[in-house]
Amino acid sequence: MGYDIGSSSVKVALLEAESGKPLAAAFSPASEMDIQAPRPGFAEQDPELWWQELIRATRELRKKHPFSKDDIGAIGISYQMHGLVCVDKDLRPLRPAIIWCDSRAVTYGNQAFEQLGHSYCLEHFLNSPGNFTASKLKWVKENEPEIYKKIYRILLPGDFIALKLTGEAVTTVSGLSEGIFWDYKENNIAKSLLDFYGIDTGLLAPTVPTFGEQGELNTAAGELLDIAAGTPVCYRAGDQPNNAFSLHVLEPGEIAATAGTSGVVYGVTDRASYDPLSRVNPFVHVNHLPGSPRYGILMCLNGTGILNSWLKKNFFGKESYADMNAAAELAAPGADGIYCYPFGNGAERILENKNPGAEIRGIDFNRHSRNHVARAAQEGIVFSLIYGTEIMQPMGLQLSRVRAGFANMFLSNLFARSFANLSGCTVELYNTDGALGAARGAGFGVKYYPGYKDCFKGMEIVQRVDPQVKESERIREVYQQWKEGLIKLIK
Image (cartoon, rainbow, N blue to C red):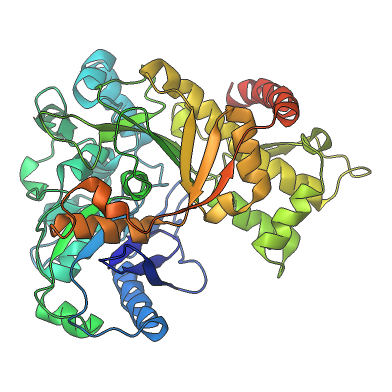
């Protein structure tokens, strides 16, 4: 069984262990979970809400595919990255979680980057401390000192869900790296950054392997989920490393993409490399070992799913996303001169943590319809992702083939085709997602699957999208014009 803890919903999937075939999946809630924004740039969720939706999703799953409490061999967890959950000695949340798209801590991260030194931070952390979890914790320390004093452990969202399942507050090295709690040069906790922030390393949870025993389902959780107590929880990873794993992206040069809540291109390397401006971010990949290093370089666009849902809500009402995709196809490449800049969901790392806001530029009330706006939005997301891959190339990653799940925006033929045409590489779409990836990871963690390749039985390619020469020429012209506008926007 695999759980995927997103900021929009919680998804659960069942995988038949022997065949590797997906059996059923469910999610909750039916509409998207609320994200609270008490101040501009803030984004928070109640961690207990994730747990309640996990319980509901599991019950929905049982309706679709009845199973007995002893049928589950292992549980894996995928989760929204970079969040901060603070718990007290009773392991209860002290405040709402500060989630991935919250930009309140940018100032603290920038200050650390300047005062510790760019070279030092990049050599030791491979990143600027930026707006990551460590900097969010510094914000709590400075702005909510009474809450900070009560913190017993800080956890990532997946750590919190594992805590609810097992009663144990633990994390992983991959998780520590995504929060900028890991020193790659020292191969240990990033003590220099925590000392600079005045944060006690004792607040960090002990580590467990990414694959392997991380705890067992306790009696209380077992009763709520109707799953046997003692069922092992033996895999967890952030959503993007897990998405790469779910697509069998484990070796240097392999690349995964996703376009759900956030848009991501994630490439694997065996080099501890970094971008001098920290616009893309290396983390410890799921299959990293001291003698066989694996790092995932992550390029993230915050304004992806939220742009798509905003567009649907404001232009297409009760029509489906499929209807909206079909409408976008009716407009020609370039959307007849409309350019969309999808930067309306907090500070964007590819823009050096700037938050310029979103823009839809060039609308003519006499010529343009919602079809043009829909096309411009999809192209704007693709353009932003490709802009990010150009940053990744000097770090040794080249696009030749990209794997993605047949889900979210990759369900749009226009989106997948635009990505292939602009990148110049084949896009392969598979019958997998984060929850199924977490289930496969659980199978390896419990040693049911003896090797990584054995985890991917039953995974099939659904669609292959190859670049087309004529379409590629036109989309590249539009992209260059879009980039000229981007330079003006971020200035």
